[in-house]
Image (cartoon, helix red, strand yellow):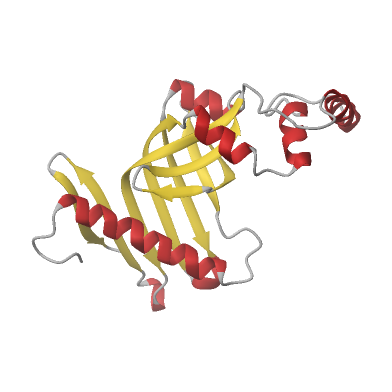
Amino acid sequence: MSEPGMDSDTIYQEALSRVHQVLERARATDLPEPTAGVLATVGQDGWPAARTVLLKQLDERGAVFYTNRTSRKGQHLAENPRAALCLHFQPLYEQVGIRGVVAAVSAHEADHYWAQRERLSQLGAWASHQSEPLASRHELEARLEEVEARFPERVPRPPHWSGYRIIPASIELWSAGDGRLHQRERYEQRADGWCHFLLNP
């Protein structure tokens, strides 16, 4: 538990610090993608959908991931800008959950990250009509060849490709315990600020 008398901002910073500590431990393992997490969204039809994304940034503003904004997740977030992200680190027997309202990152942030991507990933973002039906793999490969010819040097960021930031309303830390008596802690933003408490396993 947080120390008695801690103010809201300090409690929130403690939560973020603890998540970063878990991520550092995960990066020290042999996990191929230590920042991979399952993102859950719900669209207007009420059906939930979950898929794996990569956490690319975490700071006091929130947790950032990037995607094609015309994809199913992008459509869901346009209809219902709320999401939950769960990162499970099997070698550590630890888990982090982040839930909150979602907002688009700035164009500057998206451009900065886009410039760091490998060329093939950049080309793929143009070639893939993400989440739409695909007649054949050949169709995708043909679009990739077309895009590669169109951009022989620098690949600009597509207008439909950007990032989202989950602005945390809660952060939950989980670690495995013997006999399923796990350790669960939640940091939660309430009307009077951030608080920290334990949960039954």
